[in-house]
Amino acid sequence: MRLDPFRRVDDTPFSARRTDIERARGQPLRVEPNAVGLTALDYGDVVFRLQDSSGRLEEVTRRAPVLYLLRGDSVVDVPFAALAGYVRTHDARAFERGGFLVSPRLGLAFVPTEPDWVTALAAHCVDAWRRLGNDAAQE
Image (cartoon, rainbow, N blue to C red):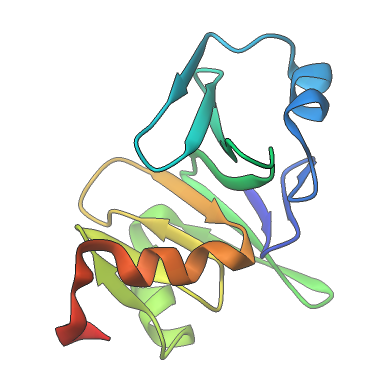
């Protein structure tokens, strides 16, 4: 996964709409609405979650054995096995929710103990992750 935080995941900008994604990738294998007002376009290797009401892209989830993280004019290669340590070292505001480690600075969420799926977040999604579970003790 190549991540330019809050801007782009691989070739997909966070400004993309459902029609843009379907034009670029074709019809998804599955389309799944969820209880929080997002619709998932599941392509097997990547899942795009869009806001039902506006069509705005919220999250992109894909396998990332290595995360290629754009940092200014350079790219940092972070193997998934080292990602939790990298996040904890480079984001003092990182927090945990529902088993996910969330990095507001890097715009991503993942479960460190699970296979290498990483979710890239649109900037406006970080606060929603903070509110998950109403876990005021970690706020």
